[in-house]
Image 1: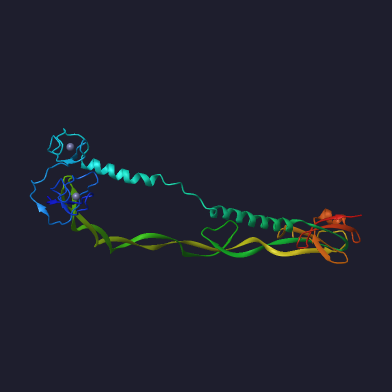
Image 2 (image 1 turned 180 degrees about the vertical axis):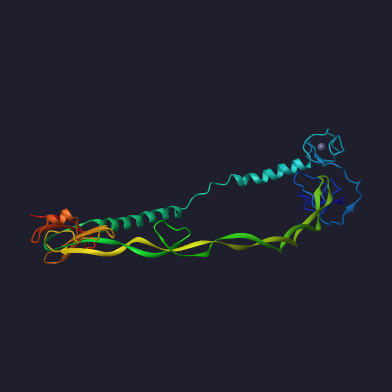
Length: 340
Ligand SMILES: [Zn+2]
Ligand SMILES: [Zn+2]
């Protein structure tokens, strides 16, 4: 258990400091302890016998506003019967009265700075949109077709014997040899290793002395433990694994596969396009893709333009035709129509 310490208080009437807790009236001016009095510990060595003070807090007489000891049924100052709040209730009221004015402060006004950022963003977005739209607006130009060109291609595959290997022998393959090879790895437990780690733990490194206000001029001291962290080494076993190879039979073989062989090409200018023709070997060759491109060139007194078109559109335009062009901001043809 702690010790009983005599507290001190200050007189708000005459300004006398460090008045001993045992006095209910100021030795300087004779005024009783008021509601504004708050006890404090001035010297931890002001120890008194544990049975000296009252157990409970003083109470404040409603009639004369002076403190009376807990054991008194009548106010020793004016003789009125016990009434009113105790020291702690008075302290709580004092604290609440001090806190109130701060809550009525005016609401915080927002400066214009927070509204400026969005306006700047809107302006930047508008400028960006202006340039984007401007660059997308097409321009028109008149021109005359000066040249046409076309190209048609057919890719050809041929059936060839190729070397390959796999974990199974495919149908139609000619086996050359087999070998035992690593197909996969399995993780297996090899051994355990002892490792260490630092484990934190809390411990009481000491005590500090605190004082509990009893509300009657005295304080009860008590010990508060102080905690600190220290580390201890903990050992544990950790599993160590290794990769164990899994062997299997690998088949090396020859097999027939379709592979790229060559491209057949036909091309021309203003003539009618046709597909390249070549007789393919019936069992060992095949087509595997066709592609076609149609281009034309047109010009006016300032520029020359080239573009590629779908077949039908390309075919409908002839050298010498007058055309109306829709051009991108970069100068490439977006759309081409006969002008007549
Ligand atoms: Zn005084
Ligand atoms: Zn009284």
